[in-house]
Length: 86
Image 1 (cartoon, rainbow, N blue to C red):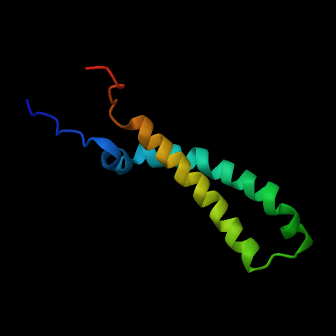
Image 2 (cartoon, rainbow, N blue to C red):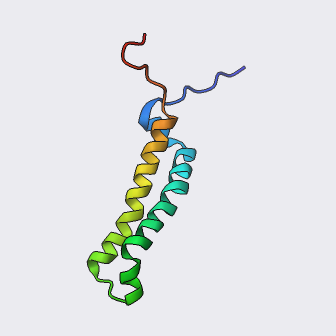
């Protein structure tokens, strides 16, 4: 019987898993889209989008996805003992 390869520990291992990215994208993209709609939607509807609004429109979902992926990676990582535990 072949032994399973050791799972990579820590952030690097969690970020290498497709499930971490799927979870992050599934949570981050809708939140980012909602932020864009609330924060820049009126400017887009008026037709007054300039370079700053375009950059904000692109960055909002990227930041939300980044936070969601980091959160998913933290949740998927190994459990660390609390201070004072063996």
